[in-house]
Image: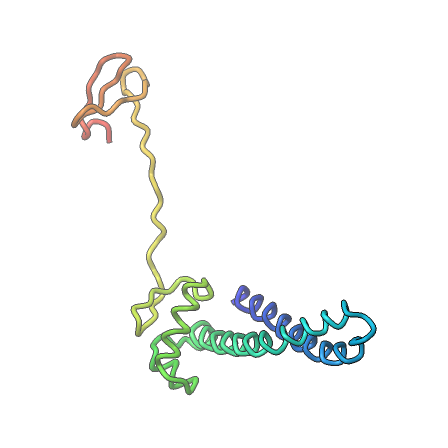
Length: 165
């Protein structure tokens, strides 16, 4: 949830910046039209960025707020099916499905298994790699695998897999 809030704050900052640049850019164009072409050009850039970028950023911000609401419904209100979340938030199940997939892909929802309809708490334990050091029981040398057995190059003894484990 911390990462999601951080991303929302960052996006909100860009939304405000694009809105501010749009408003500032409009008067820069006529005021500096005959005086300074650099500031006038900067005003044009601000207006174009604000005109095209601002709506896209605000719509993206709204979708992140909807995503946050779905994540809150799962983590704080313990709602785990698409239908429960959709009914609770008054949105359709397709939106819930898309938001849960997005939240899992961006790691806003961690520790859940999702089958497309239901979230389950992941109770699987992390698999740990166990490294077996294959050493000779006679001399302590490193064994080499030869066919279906292990061979010690130092003392020449062969061990079967059962004798090693």
